[in-house]
Image 1 (tube, helix red, strand yellow):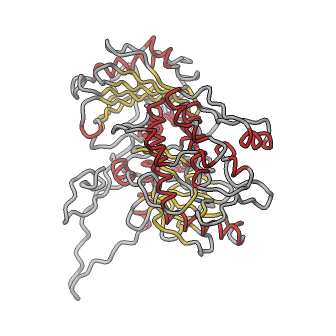
Image 2 (image 1 turned 45 degrees about the horizontal axis):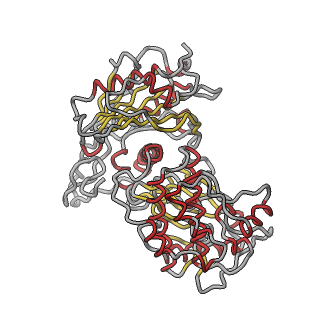
Image 3 (image 1 turned 180 degrees about the vertical axis):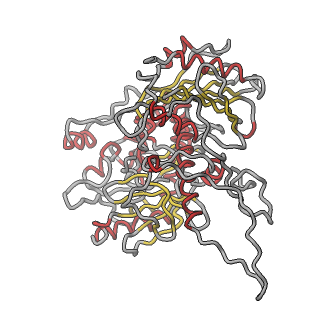
Length: 563
C-alpha cells in the first residue's frame, strides 16, 4: 500500500481513491471510499489496454464470474462498470496478507493452521463450483489470510463449467494460470473441470505447509513436463497432512477427491479467535494500522473539499451561525506527504469498516456496528462526530530536531533466540517462537522487523516486536520515520503518553482490545519502535505494567546499538 502519486485518479466511478494497493500487468487496484464511507478495493485496467477488445472481454468475464460466486470464503463484488472508458470493478476490502506474502515473511504454517486453511479453501471451491465455475488459478497469491479465515480471490480467468474449459493462450503463446499450482490437464491445454481446482488446492496446501511447490523444474518446459509425468515431492509435508494432499495431486482427474470428500478428510475445525500463528496475526494488524493512516489523511482531504451545505432559514431572517465543530486532524508537513502520512485519528473508524472489507489483483506488488466512528454509542438521532486530535504540535522529547538525530540502532533486530537471553519473561513461559529479522518495504517506509511470542500453559501470551528504521540517504532520518510510525498508534481516547520510561525516549500505553485483560506498550528509542503486549487471565489491567516495562527494557538491551 502506498500514497497516491500525481498520475493517480482522484475518483474511479463513484469512489474516491485513498491509496494505491498494488498493480500488475492488467491494471491497478486502489483503496477507495464509497459515497457512504465504506472502504472498497477498486480494480481498474491500464489505459493502454482499454481499447483492446480481448482485454475488455476478459475483464467483463471477470465481473460476471465474480458476481456469480457468493460465500463466506470468497470476496463479494459490490459494483462494476465493464463499459466505462477505463473499466473497473469494486470489491469488498479485506485488510489481510496473501498466503504468498505470509510464506515469504513468516515461513510455512503449522499443521493446525494448514488444516484450517484447507477447510476454508474447500468451502470456497464448493461455492465456486456451485456457481457453475472453475477457478483455474488457485494459488498462494490468490488466497487471503483474513482475520476470520481464508478468502479466495481473483476470478479473472475463471470459466463456466459448461464451456469447453480448455486452457487459454495469450498473444505470446504463454499459458494463463500459474505453473506452481497448475494441474496436468491445464499444462497440456486439455479440458479443465472442478477436479483441476482440487489439484491446485493440493499444491497450495503443500506450499502452505512446506514453503515449496510440489513440482520444481530448471525451466518452464521442464516444470510442465514434471507436472504431467513426475510424482510430487511431498517429503517435507507433515505425515498428518500427507493423506489429505496426496490424493488431490493424482494425475488422473477422476482419481481426485471431490470438495465434499475433502471436507470429511479434514475433519471438524474448532473455533478460534486468532486462526493464524502470531506472525500472520502481526501482518494482519500491521495492515489495519497502515490502512487507518491512509484513511485518516484522506478523511482530512475529503472534509476540506466538501462544500458546506446551505442552512435553510425564513426569508428576511438572518441565518443562524453554524454550530461549533471539533477540529479535524492537522495536515501533515509537505515533506511527509509523498510517503503516506502516518497520522492518527481514524483508527477506530477504520477498524469498524475494515471488518467486511480484498485485493482482486494477486499479481500486484502484492468494530462493532453498535458504535459510531469515534467510539460513541450510535443512536437514531446521533450525528456523525468529527475525529478528535491533539491540539498543537505532537509532543517529542528532547530539544534536537529529529531531522538532525543520528541512528542509534544500525544492526538488524535480534533473533528470538538472542532476545530470549535478554528478555526476563515471567516464570512458566516457554522459549519464544516467531520470525525475523526480515526486511519490509511495501509502503515506502523501509524497516526491519522481528516478532517473538512467549506462551505458558495457562494461556497467557507475551508479544514483542521490533521495528527498526534506518537513515539511508533519503530526505528523512530513521528517527523521523520511527516517530511518525509511533504516532500512528496514538488515539486520544485510549492512549496515554509516557516520557518517563528511562530505558526509551517515549512510550504509548494502549488499552487492550475489548477492554480485556493485559497491557500494551509502544515504545520509541531514536530509530527503533518496540511493540510489547501481555495478555491472559493472570495479567489483569493495572497489574501488568511492570512486567511489560521489564520485557520492553530487555528487548532494547537485546538490540545492538551504534552509540
